[in-house]
Image (cartoon, rainbow, N blue to C red):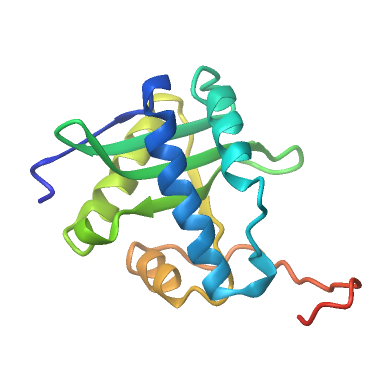
Length: 163
């Protein structure tokens, strides 16, 4: 399957396909943790964000994996300034989704590898990732690739909802 997958930068004509994948990712996050309750406006916000991000490659790296003309995976990494630290830019994976029917075939590792290639072109060296704390599948995947804990973010809600 990996041989069939081509990874490339996202194009504007990919917006709807990417939006479908990212919406599915958000719904999956919601399953892991109810604090990730997906907004009714989520899909529209995803589409508008993509339409801004794709032409502006200065703020993120957005790659898709395709089989033929079908988008089967997406990875989005935001470029975040680190004013007080070296290296000065953190490439943070914020969104990563692979269609269930093509998982466990090496596509995840391929997508990370292609992301690192894009980073090298811009002389970017720090790659981090964020995902819901209870997503053990993501934790195990990234740890297998050599990722280690970086920061801790805790939450407290005052709106009467649990957790």
